[in-house]
Amino acid sequence: MERRRFLQWSAASAVAVPWGFRASGAARRRPNFIVVLCDDLGYGDIAAMGGKRVRTPHLDRMVREGTLLTDFYAAANLCTPSRAGLLTGRYPIRTGLAYEVILANDTRGLAQSEVTIAEALKPEYATALIGKWHLGHVAPFWPPTAQGFDLFFGLPYSHDIKPLSLYESNGPGVELTKEDVDFPQLQARFAARAERFMEEHRDRPFFLELALSAPHLPNYPHPDHAGHSRAGAYGDVVEEVDAIVGRLLAKLAALGIERDTLVVFTSDNGPWFEGSAGNLRQRKGGGGYDGGYRVPFIVRQPAVIPARRKVDSIAMSIDLLPTFCALAGKDLPAGVTLDGLDISDVLLRGKASPHDELLLFDNEDVVAVRTQRWKYVTNDYYRRSFTEITERGYPQLYDMRADEAEDYSMAARFPEVLADMQARLERARGTFAPLKSQELPEPWRSRSQGK
Image 1 (cartoon, helix red, strand yellow):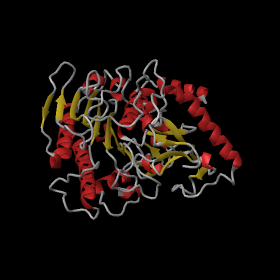
Image 2 (cartoon, helix red, strand yellow):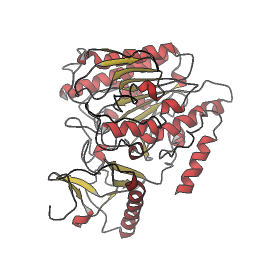
Image 3 (cartoon, one colour):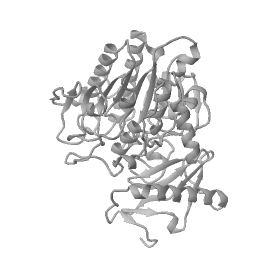
Image 4 (cartoon, rainbow, N blue to C red):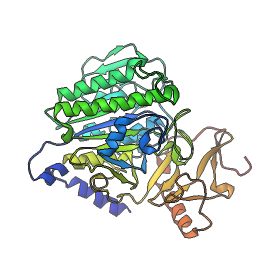
């Protein structure tokens, strides 16, 4: 598998020009990249993924005009590790940020040695992170302009953590400013600053991560959306998120750059205490089941990304860095071990996933392995314990083609598959165990059958 991965990385690195250049046969600009990253949006919260109670017409349009990945995973089931994985293309345990989330009194952060998407796309790209950072709010991890972003306008962490201010930085060495947070207007402020960034850089390639802090609780609906949804304040906020997507698509059209811009819509993990995981099992911060990890993923670029296409190839947010590098004609970061792979063939042509497997981590433990057809889950939370299910005598093997809700184990019927998946998991644990920084404290960890 390591040789196959090396060859895939080598092929991606050898790309000389973006796909759009080759396809047209004429010189075109490098593509812009916009990632709209929601906070705690569930798999079932939008209509495209089967949601019924929240209206999302702009996302519906994005699906009609683009491609939907049905089996897309966040890099973790919590905010900080997920965001670290997305920006670096690496399983979060490699970055040292796989354990829990960064809180107000934390001194952890994304190491300067890590290469972000923003840094990988330099110097050709203008870069901005607008919204929630949550990867360190003390030096040297703060502000995000220390990690390749020309502009940061946003929050240091989730909007339920105090103290909280809204910050702006326009590059290294530029004074960091802050202001009080007007919560009902916050997402609209993010959207407006994103539009301004797009206007300022319409004539050159740019990478924009619009990391909305919604619909993470508590919900603060904008006055234009408050009371409009059948799903309470949470639904009001999701409808505002949808409207923001509409604003961005309209701005791209008005600037004449929508065909030059690849737009991704996704979430950092599954829903917390509110929201819908659809028919997926569990939620944010749970064990190894999909409800905490599997998230919406819609991608659109007119005349480049096929319209009205639904693809079930497995993929993960760690794939964005190598994919953007390939589409932009950029080499992969030198000397960096990546876990993500180039999924441009998945996005452009609906091809099979380049991944033989994906690993799901709960904190620093590998708790599940997903292949295209199968899913093997080893851990869950039960009665305040982080429990090893297999040690209780109930190995959990799921056929994801027939049972995406992970309701019925097929372990007894497919012993050969079970053995293969168990071997995969043990190999993964052997690889990543030396990178662990700490164990879960008691009473959360329990591996005995009697507890």
